[in-house]
Length: 486
Ligand SMILES: Cc1cc2nc3c(=O)[nH]c(=O)nc-3n(C[C@H](O)[C@H](O)[C@H](O)COP(=O)(O)OP(=O)(O)OC[C@H]3O[C@@H](n4cnc5c(N)ncnc54)[C@H](O)[C@@H]3O)c2cc1C
Image 1 (tube, rainbow, N blue to C red):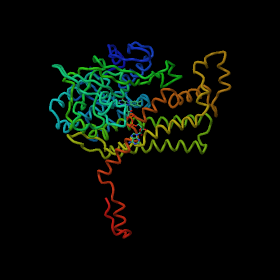
Image 2: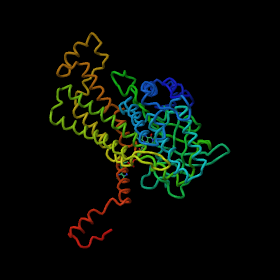
Image 3: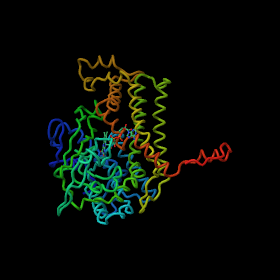
C-alpha cells in the first residue's frame, strides 16, 4: 500500500480494539462521539495527498511508490530541508492543534532506525526486527502513537519501587511466540484512533531493572491491550462553530497491558540497558524535536494572527497594552523559528550517518510549555467577554433573530457580526473550550514537564563543563587570589 487516503485510514479502524469511554466499551469506528475526530484524522491523511509535493517522497525501496516524508532516514542537510518542508505542511493541517499526527512518532521511529550504532550495543536481532517494522510502517502508512511514561503513582520512591513496582510495565512470562508483558503506561494520545502503540524508553532504568527495559510495538487491537479514555472533548458541533473541537480531539487514553503477548518479531529491546538507556537521548533532542518545534512554530504563527484578528474586532490593534502582548507572542514565534534554523544549520552526523539537527533545539522543552500557557492567557485577556458573545453561525440564518444579531453584535471598523462571531468562536475553541484546555495541558507535559526538562539541561551543562567563567574572571582580574573551589 502507498501513502494512505483518509478513507483507507478509516477502514483500518474497524477491528476489535478494546477502548473504554464514558461508562462503557466503545466500537471506535462507529461510535458517534468519536466520528468528528476520526474524520479530522482522516482529513490529515487526505492532506498528505493534497500537498503531495511536500508531504510525500519517493520510497527508496519500492520504485514508483510514495511514502510520508516523516519516515525518511535523514542523511544530509538536503534531507533535513525536505523533511522540514513536509513537517511544516503537515502541521498546517490543524495549525499545530493536533499534537500527535502520525508524523510525530514516524520521526521518532525513523530516528531510532537511523541510530544503528546504538542498537549495535545490544542483541543484533533487535535491530533487524526494528528495521523490518520501520518498513512495515512505510508500506502500510500506519498511524502510530507512543506510550512511554511509566504509570508510577508514588513519587516519593522510584519508578521500580514500592507500589510502583506492580504498576510499571514489565515482562512476566514468555512462550514460543513472544514475551508476556503486564503493567500500565501514561498516556497514549491518539491511542484509540491509532493503528500501533510504540513503547520505548523515557527515563533510564538502573541495573537490576532489566525486566522493565522494553522497546516494542504492537497493533492497538492486540489481545490484552485496554485503553481507558478521558472524556471526549469533540463536541459534535459544526466546523464553523467549533473549528477545532469538531475535528481535532486526538483522544488520550491510559493504557493497560493485561498480560499481552508481544510477538518476538516485534520485540526490539528486552533487557539491554545499554540500548534502552541511550536510545532516546541519542535521538530525541535533535531529531524528534525537529518535528515538535516545527509544529510549535506553526501554532505560534497561528496564535499571533488569531490575536491580531481578536483585536481587529474591537479596533484595538494599536492599543499599547494589547500591542505589547502581541509583541510577546511574536517574540516566542521568532525565537522558535530561529532555534529551528540554528539547529538545522548546525546539524551533524549523530552516529551511523544519522543526520539530525543540533541538540540545542531541545532547549525549547524548557520554555515552550510556559509560552503556550501564556498565549492562552493572552487570548483570554484580549478577548474578554467577546469570547462569549458568540452566537452559533447557524443562528444568523434564523429569520427571527438574524438581523437583530447583525445589528447588536457587529465588529468594529466595518467587520460583520458573522466575522466577529467566527473569530471569537475560533479563539474560544483554541484557548477556552474543554479541548483548548486539554491542549494546553498537552503542551505542558507531552515532552515531560518543564521542570524536569530544566533540571535535565542543567545537569547536562554541568557535566559538559559549561562553567568556570567566574573563576577565570576573578583569577585574571586579580580580584581573588585563590579561586580553586569545586
Ligand atoms: C494531554 C497529555 C498527553 C500526553 N500524551 C502522552 C503520550 O501520548 N505518550 C506518553 O508516553 N506520555 C504522554 N503524556 C504523559 C506525559 O509524558 C507525562 O504526563 C509527563 O511526563 C509528566 O509526567 P509527571 O506527572 O510524572 O510529571 P512530573 O515531571 O513529575 O511533573 C509534575 C509537576 O512536578 C514538577 N516537578 C517535577 N519534578 C520536579 C522536581 N524535581 N522539582 C520540582 N518540581 C518538579 C513539574 O514541573 C510539574 O509541575 C501526556 C500527558 C498529557 C498531559
